[in-house]
Image (cartoon, rainbow, N blue to C red; front, side):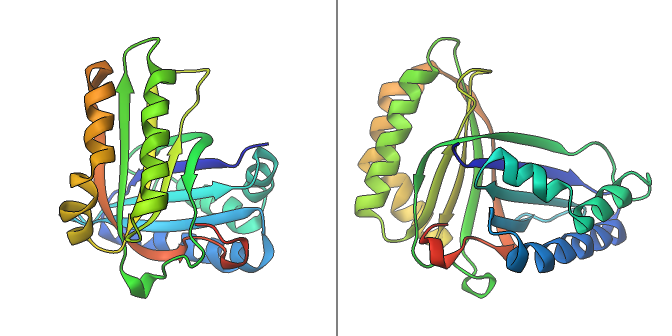
Length: 224
């Protein structure tokens, strides 16, 4: 079975509530990294434009649906769910998206928190019936960054091809300067927009985030 990615936008009631959520996620990381090899990455991020101090974004990758299900049953995750159901922490239900990986650039050496990588989470909506064609364009982008962009540390495309019309990306780069001056100006990006831009209904969301806790990959697997 293909690996799956889950991303989530979580809004807490206040800054103190976010501190509680971050602490609970840290306990999950402390358990998961040594004990759950099927959890391939587990990343806590905050918005670069962190104006409210209440928002966080999660990036999770699992080797399979079974690995995800097993993770949800662990005690630290159950403790997090208990915290979230008290009504004291969350401002609303988290915005969660899960889908199989359909294209992925791999990295032998995942960045650490101290590397301060630039991370982008984006989602694109396409007209009905055009998702398969759009996916070809995104596969070409992944092929290009794999061959030509050392500064692109990972580029993951995930989508449920049987449901909906969205493609989502998790992108990890050396720096924001690399994003602006190299990646966004690459011929692969221009070609993707030229070929499939007409089928987009718009960029529904793109957010810049910073890595604050967790692991962006498992080095022994040679992937991120």
